Amino acid sequence: MAESSKQELVQLIKRFGAYLTVKISNLLPISLQNLDLRSVGAIAGLAVAIVFTWRLLRSPSQPQRREPKRQAGTPGSSGVNTHSNVSLVPPRVSSSLEDSRAQNVVDEFFQSVKPTLGQIVRQKLSEGRKVTCRLVGVILEESSPEEIQKKVTVRSSVLEVLLEITKFCDLYLMERVLDDESERKVLLALEDAGVFTSGGLVKDKVLFCSTENGRSSFVRQLEPDWHIDTNPEIVFQLARFIKYQLHISPVRSERTAPNVFSAPALEQFFGCV
Image (cartoon, rainbow, N blue to C red; front, side):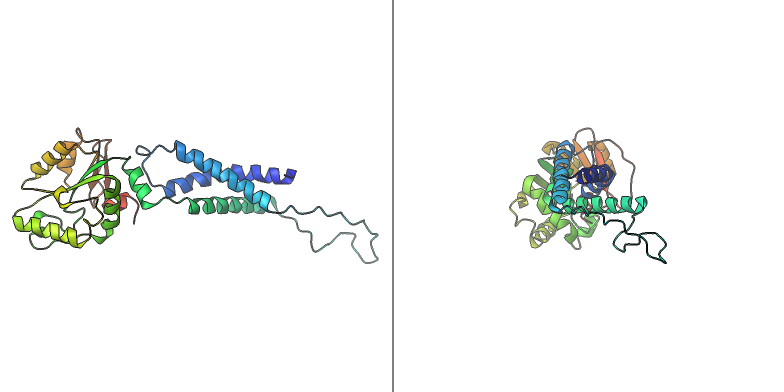
């Protein structure tokens, strides 16, 4: 590699560091408490170095031109060489071009390694194998047991995430209901939405109780890695017993414990919107 190419590579590597950090944080909106980035960083660093080297080696080096012999100035010439093919690039413009080139290389790299939704779900859940989740306000549009007596609507925006969770987690859905008819409506709505077709979730894992404390009791008996709920009191009570919890609330709330996270919606926690 020519000396100029080596210097160019050094300059590019110096400039891509900060930009690479930003790309990682935007690409993987994952809490550092839930994800060990050492392996990701090692792979990313190696891959970017390979990309840089490949791009530099792929570009044929410009042959050095022999400077033409200096000719005597003609009468009327000012004595200044004015070849049209010679241009001087100011240092600031050159630096900007190098920054742009480094960003383009990093963008190309991350476009090729963008993680799938399944990978993001597993990383956000810290590879948890059992998840319990409330239905009302999380999976269902309705926000109370009284509402599901009238109708039950599964939120379409949450289905993709829900099905990804069932692929590698033992998922239990639960809700407080006021009558048997509400249970029937919930199961029918989940079936119509295709929740049971993936094979990861069966009707026996949809649990119903008559009180909020009953749902809390279900969670403690199942001992999940994650519990997802909308009731702040239940989240607070379970914080001592459950490894991680996700509090779904449209209003941003203060973090009550280090193992309790919050999001306006389940799909937003996984960066789907």
